[in-house]
Length: 404
Length: 69
Ligand code: HEM
Ligand code: SF4
Image (cartoon, rainbow over all chains, first blue to last red):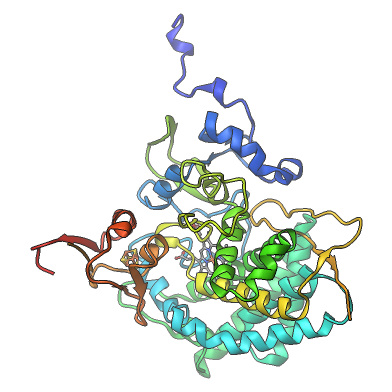
């Protein structure tokens, strides 16, 4: 070593890439790129979005996700920042308050509570599918993957049926604006939605009902503060965390079933296999590609020193393709019974509270769509383009099928 | 024989155990984890250790024969 002043701890040579998960080109084949990078450079660096690190290996991602003392969620969980009106509770809180907020929501998300929503969800899904099944062609994102999660959240929160259309219009408006990077329009719809949720929460304070919004409006705890800002943050988070993610989850599942027609036939009579297809789809194309933490104290990850204030993206999607954990990770294979559990729903304290609901929606959509449209295929000349950034899933899924 | 126990005072219901070892743990209606089996079969011991190691609140106890369950 010639000159110690130029020596560096970071093996710069093995990490030449300036990583950006939001780059539309890189995003089209992100797992191809990561299969190389994960081996030579476990902790990637990006100079965009104010500078950030990105963890690519399963062991590093799970360790960081379970270590709130070094990696906090308090300063936001996205790279780039989303710019939401208020903090998202419980996600952007740490222990010790985190558990009190989470506990307030928990009763609505237990397997039993979620299963009780099943019949209502099925009714909504059947309605949607029957509206287009006779047509012989559809964009499955627009017709089914898009609307269902939004309606389910309306059901869960306890919105009146006649308010769903407004609610959906704003959520859609927000979503399509963010797809094309139109921040002004996005902010416009986000503000409308926010005002709407605030009004609903306020109404539940004086007129309690038997719904999640009432719990959000009235929850109290000796150990944690339930201010109005916290309450609005909870309502906001349910919407933000439960909508886009599930749209992408359903979209990718329908895509993988289309690309594996033999599997698609077999899942119709094998509920357990459908369960594995859902899990494999979540692993293979994780809807939440990655979420961020902020470093609070010096910490080392796979040879890279991280410093207080550094942003770190925990790439759940990349962890789910780590060959150290998943043999043949680049192969979609729902028949493998030896796949260990994936971390598409995160890891540790902030693990998705909505996982059972998301799985139920995916299952009902698959069952009811395949019962009526068993053999859809990609429309002639169409290609599948992926949404990039925070949430990954097909932008559109234009398909055709034979109508008797 | 190996048994699993969940300390109900410590468990905060993050369901990490159910995700890592669905055959061994499930959340009850209070959102607290409950072991699903008594003696843990040998092929699930790795999953049990994985769950115990990664429980964010260290609420899972792995008890071997003779220990008080
Ligand atoms: C396929 C669909 C879904 C995926 C892939 C998904 C993924 C995730 C992930 C990765 C996290 C961890 C966040 C982090 O580590 O920073 C998370 C947290 C969360 N999710 Fe989901 N999610 C989905 C559906 C839902 C639904 C349907 C709801 C509710 C209606 C929901 C509500 C939440 C909430 C409230 C949190 C924060 C939990 C906490 O901070 O304790 N998610 N989700
Ligand atoms: S991982 Fe730990 S805290 Fe979470 S449910 Fe299981 S036992 Fe409880």
